[in-house]
Length: 153
Ligand code: HEC
Image (cartoon, rainbow, N blue to C red; front, side, top):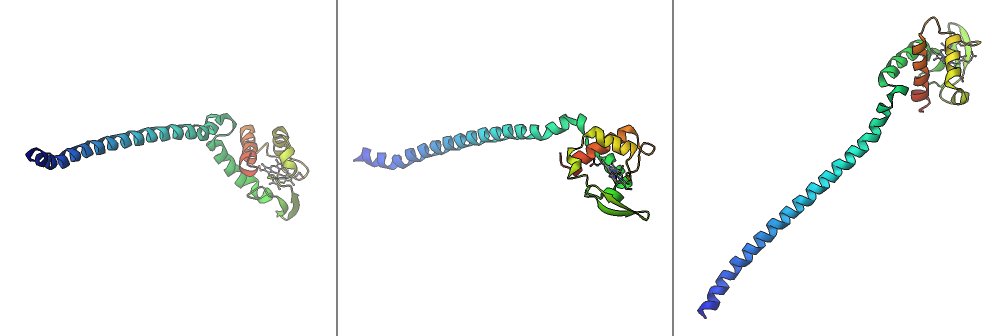
C-alpha cells in the first residue's frame, strides 16, 4: 500500500522528466533539421547566384559601363532618327524626311556586327557617317548596345 502510493506520487514526476527530455531532444532535432535546411538553402543560393554572375564574368562582350556610355552616345547621335527603342519609322530631321529602318527588328536582326560597324562608321545613303564624331571603340560599343538593349540579345 505504502509503496504503491509513493510510486503513484512519483510517477508523474518521472513522466514529466521524460517528457522534458523528449521535448529537449525534439527541439535539438528540429534545430539540427533547420540548420541543415538553412545550409542547404544557402547552398542553392550560391549556386543560383553564380549563373546570374556569369554574364558579368563573361564581361568582355559588354560591361555595364560600356553600355552606359553607348546609351548616352545613342541618345545624342541616333535617337532622333532611330527612336529611343530603335523602332525607326518615318522621321523628319532638320527638315529632311527619312524612312529609318528599325534596329530592334526586321533586317537589323540578320545583319552582322561588322556590317553595323561599317554602316555607322561610313554611313549609307541617308544614314550619316560617324567616323569623325565617334571613335572605333565607341562605335563597337554602340553595336553591343543595339544588340543587348534594343534587340535583347
Ligand atoms: C539622319 C538620320 C539618322 C541618324 C542620325 C542615324 N541613322 Fe542609322 N540609319 C538611318 C537610315 C535612313 C538608315 C538606312 C540606311 C540608309 O538609307 O542610309 C540607317 C541605318 C542604320 C543601320 C543599319 C541597319 C540595318 O538594318 O542594317 C545601323 C546599325 C544604324 N543606322 C545605326 C545608327 C547609329 C548607331 C546611329 C547613331 C550613332 C545612327 N544610326 C544615326 C538614319 C539615321
